[in-house]
Length: 133
Image 1: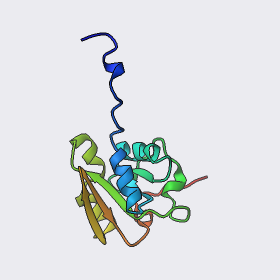
Image 2: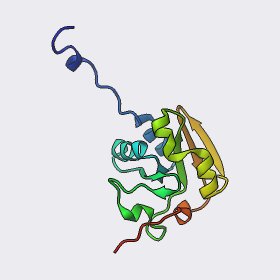
Image 3: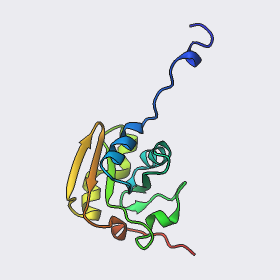
Image 4: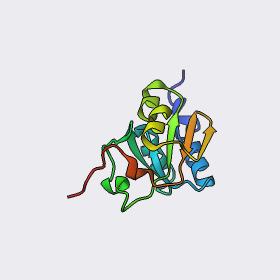
């Protein structure tokens, strides 16, 4: 392969860019997801969509703001799960989300994503809510 060949190729779109666009088009602005989707979507959307990362039903407090998890400060009404790869799917398994938050009002499937939407602020149902000092 010639030197510089890869550098001259078009950039690959961000991994979760399509998800960012889908969430914006469906007016879903603040929710929960696994770590990989959370950071990517916040960046890809320019902060228009906030996904606070969780692991199971608890906050995943790495590269986050505690206010994202506080029901008094934020309103999250959806969870993004992925069907693959397994290393990402473990964060927000749909069966666990059902146990923690109850049945969603709507469930959407888009590419490798499952988006569950509730008619309530699901932050109040997190298993552990961080407290600010």
